[in-house]
Length: 134
Image 1 (cartoon, rainbow, N blue to C red):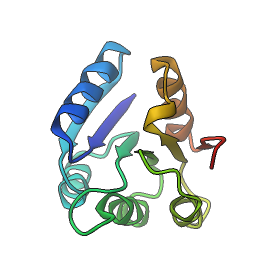
Image 2: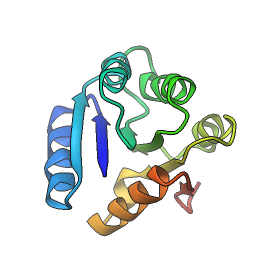
Image 3: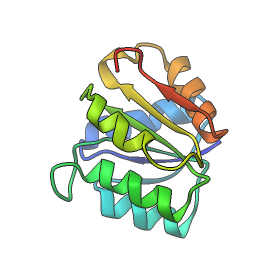
Image 4: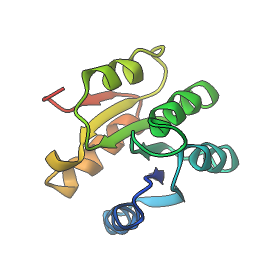
């Protein structure tokens, strides 16, 4: 599975990349903001993209980037991995048309790397997955 990762927290982003690589996931790109991940995906389209919601540009650059990515690459799975447990954000992500897989997990609730790997595989396969708290 090929995955791109976007999070403005460098320590978290690079730690997540190491974890994914240890799980056998090929990380094709990293970005610290929404514009960077949209550009990286345009150059090399992965199976799925992991995005934080709150990152530049603006207040919700990751969510805006997810919407842009969905329009440009409807078959790419999108996984919001965030500290925010917001039904509003989930509705925005899942309110798009039915193409492509989408998921929303809360960072603090992902306690097992296998959960992350399974969720990524499901969104890459076109399925939906959302944290039960949302």
